[in-house]
Length: 317
Image (cartoon, rainbow, N blue to C red):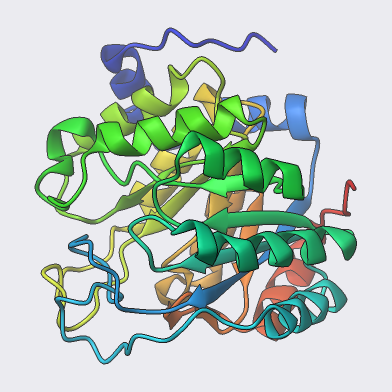
């Protein structure tokens, strides 16, 4: 498989705009060559520190400045988090992701997260964190604890980014990704569809991801879940075909990345989700809540996968 890092925006836009079935054929060919068939990784995402975030991300119900009904809560105890991780493992998850509503963690806060990471790894699971911006030293601490991956999404194109967030720049996010890579931690980085961006913005975001020196190990593709009280309240989620196109293009551009069908599945039909898997998505988050927004139940997800003959991907560590 020829892996490129020199994709241009015109090339990516041309891919995106192909007739849908031709785009799916190309994405399926790449997926089969790299991943084989019929497996999806099951992951669990837990909010370990909810609400009170000082950032102004226009989609996020955890921002302190918005009135969304999400109250600020302290960082969870290590034992409580590890109990959730053990339950997730018993339910079939091979990756446990921990999210904290911080702009960036303080070193004393990171002490408990390091314990959580070590505990999750001791369970035989991949451990992922999303904690905001990191310094190089903080990334190295997480690497020493055994962190498998760090999530820090670009959200959208560089050109549209300022319409959604003003409290940090996309360059700040890319700097954190550099620290994570330098520490030897895998990168989990993707974006959100439905923010009001153009198709060009979506393609530009994928170009930024696919022209990194090392492609992200995983690429979450999220559909906006609009929440009352946020600036993006009332926006409709993207059409399922828009999600399918973005996933298919991500699969072609970054063949070895796990493409994660992430937020917004609660509003998708089963047929729509299966189209996303056909396009190259090979990971979902289960559990009835994705940080603070609704998510399909574990039982519903397993039933959907069983009907389609899709198997949970076994653990690799």
